[in-house]
Image (cartoon, rainbow, N blue to C red; front, side):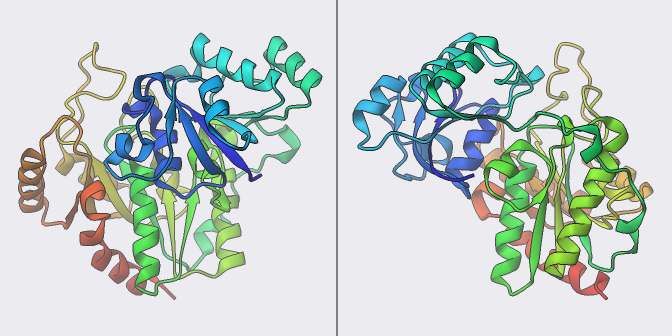
Length: 355
């Protein structure tokens, strides 16, 4: 699936809930982006909103504005938000309906499926627009159970885990992929979320659209396919949520079922409570404690990647210095240094663990 696309963010482009849009704006993307629909940032460049880098991707207030300004009609409207519960706002739904009525296809990564919306489905049938729901679960016959084949692979696997969800694990994995390849290390990435598919990565599956009994099997299938078809020197695996986030504990699968022996751990030093658990005051454990837990699972933390949410640059650098001292690990600030400080450790891991 390729073509041109407008990304819908419903006024959230500058927020963490638009992390899907952030990944597409930063790239890579299977689509050529021709704009972002975000009324709060209309008139601005989407790249400047996301990370201060101009990318010639304009923001528009409405679909009508975008169609009037662009010489070509987009092939797709892509939902660029990933909100708690996976339910889209009514405003976002109306934008999608408007586009589908005009014959523009829609790509949706939320749990609220477009094809199950009677009005949108009828509009698509009438206009010929295509609907693609990324999180539609596979049919039972297409699902795979875990076999243990992943544990027999000799290619080193490194998981990018986090102390919480919505920290930037996929962004860090992408920077590690790019950096390792620049160094001549044949590296591949297995993604586990909707954004990885939207970015066009070849290997992966949608973890939270997979019945629990088949998560390890689908993960194994993606890792094994990557190893067999690419024969890489290193496989990176994108993590989801966190080992101890009570709203969605996740991560052990990558170590236990996919055989990841190395971990880069993502952390937000300015965040006290688990995302979505603020009212319950469920605190994120100390990084040092999380490292110990990961080691008890049988993997080794190679370095930390810090999310600077709620911190000034000076505060983030101070936190990096403190954590570097307390853990003895290399520290990266991905949006500042693109994970360059971690690459020596990643390369050593790949060489030591390889066949």
